[in-house]
Image (cartoon, rainbow, N blue to C red; front, side):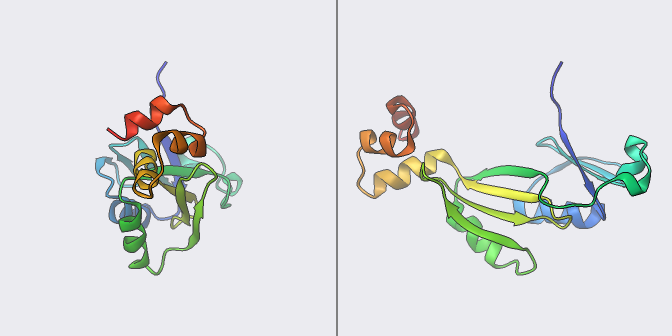
Amino acid sequence: MKYTAVVLSVADVKAARGFYEDLFGLEVCQDYGINVSFTCGLSLQQEFDWLVGLPKESVLKKSNNIELCFEEEDFDGFLKKLERMPDIVSLGVVEHGWGQRVVRLYDPDRHIIEVGENMKSVCRRFRDQGMTPEQIAARMEVPLKFVTGCLR
């Protein structure tokens, strides 16, 4: 068996598609009108009740029950891009204990999206701040081998 995708229930597939294409640069590999699949494995489904054979009223339209995670090499550049899109609701930037910065935001259907700084970028940021590989490994709570691999 092979895992293949996540399918999100969306109210307006065109609006959701535009959001994921414009903000994240995702590329569509299949478009069936009310169902769109991106090359990364994410799919969007309008009329989710029809797809899964459930009564429309039983499909929950509730936020905060799923999170999609992306990593970005140019995290600061992504934040600038996000600033140019004032209609997007951001939950703000957080730096986790291991040093990775993330921002969470909502898509048009109020699914939570997390965009995190690429872990190699975290290692390089710490190095650029003057930390040794040993200090970086201790801060991130990862093996030194991971850090040296990131800094190559």
